Amino acid sequence: MFIRFLEYIGSWVLKLLFLVGDMTLLLWEIFKQLPKKLRPKHILQQMSHLGVDTLPIVSLTLLFTGMVMTLQMAGEMIQFGAESTVGGVIAIATGRELGPVLVGVVTAGRVGSAMTAEISTMKVTEQIDALRCMAVNPVGYLAGPRMLACMVMVPLLTVYGNLISVLGGWLVSKEYFGISNYVYWHSIEQYADGADFSGGLIKAVVFGMVIATVGCYYGMRAPEGAQGVGMATTRSVVTSIIIIFLLNVILSWMLY
Image 1: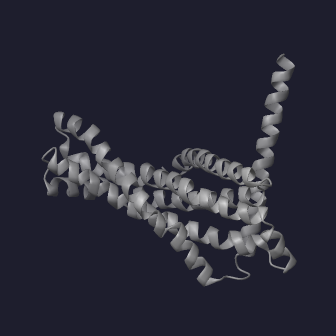
Image 2: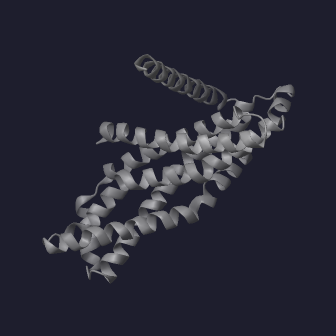
Image 3: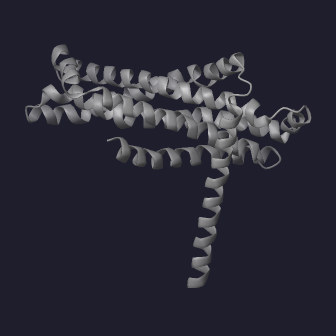
């Protein structure tokens, strides 16, 4: 029984290492293909599809997050006479952690799933094989523009989400707790600095790379049939979210 358990653990570790190595090779291949043929029109289309269309769900997620954080925290701070720190705490928490992580998770759920479904459908219907027959590298043609779009749009969405979250906190602190506009915004100027937001943007760039790499990986290796498309999409979202949480811990330790 114990031997079987060890065999199971060893098999799981080997599969995990194989997955990490395979995705790393795909990421390297994407970056090798990027400088060869950049198609600005294709990249802009992906930025619109992967970034602009995600604005509504990012707005709702970060707005409610900022409001809930303020509801939970401001009352306690006012009780201890620290209402002058509410805005700064909201801005720091959002800029360092909640902004990039929530945007990454939301983007993985919406963009990563759509990316995987699209590419896996092309694989199942043999469109990727048709690209190879026309001497077109599918990694450069399909994955390259999506990688650039994610690396640009996820940080931009993070900046937008940080602003929305701070505005949500301001709305609750003003209307519900009676904190003045000057106290709220001055606390942000006093306690938050550029490093709090630049570190979050670095995280956002890495998360964008993860979303594009995982989405393209599972899309290009999807099993055959309609069921394979569904399996690839589910695995893509779950894997992306797990990697985002793991990298968030590592990047937080390195940046702060």
